Image 1 (tube, one colour):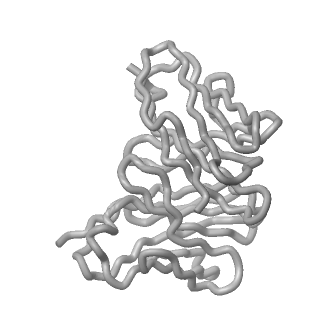
Image 2 (cartoon, each protein chain N blue to C red):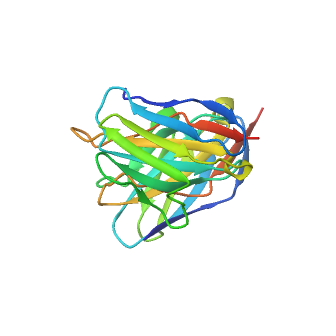
Amino acid sequence: AQSVTQLGSHVSVSEGALVLLRCNYSSSVPPYLFWYVQYPNQGLQLLLKYTTGATLVKGINGFEAEFKKSETSFHLTKPSAHMSDAAEYFCAVEGSSNTGKLIFGQGTTLQVKP
Amino acid sequence: GAVVSQHPSRVICKSGTSVKIECRSLDFQATTMFWYRQFPKQSLMLMATSNEGSKATYEQGVEKDKFLINHASLTLSTLTVTSAHPEDSSFYICSAKESVNTGELFFGEGSRLTVL
């Protein structure tokens, strides 16, 4: 079974500051890990994903995440926040059977202050 | 890129009526689709896995007679909320897994159901 915990339901940063959104997972099999962004009343947009190989994954809009097996973490970072980054962010895990069945974390609301 | 369309995007209905939501993969085939439910300010909860040509697999605690899922073709899955009540009001999101080449997963834009 898989589960995801996102630490911090609300993160507030200043424009231009570092963004760090935390995600820890639990999985009985090698996980596939995802970060999605959701804008109000919209569906999910994939930011990045880790399946196998390089543990530092680069995504869209300047985001990246690092898979750390020893820490069971997959934190999302962006060096410099932009106002347009304000949204809801979800971390998700899938077993490596690649079924497409994702288990989502609770979500983190990112606020970007001018 | 691949697109998943949900229809309707918003629906308001009276208590006791049934509502059908469509999830359609526009430019790829998807033998497997997923239905999620999202309450305000909360995460996505997986409701069921929709399998083309066979019965859906429901997650624990999800009433299959309440939430009817039909996946009659490789590009369309439908979720019917039967005898809807106000507590069924929610944001319903589907995802579709490309089944021929990449196996990529794509999400729809969501459907907001309000039951009066």
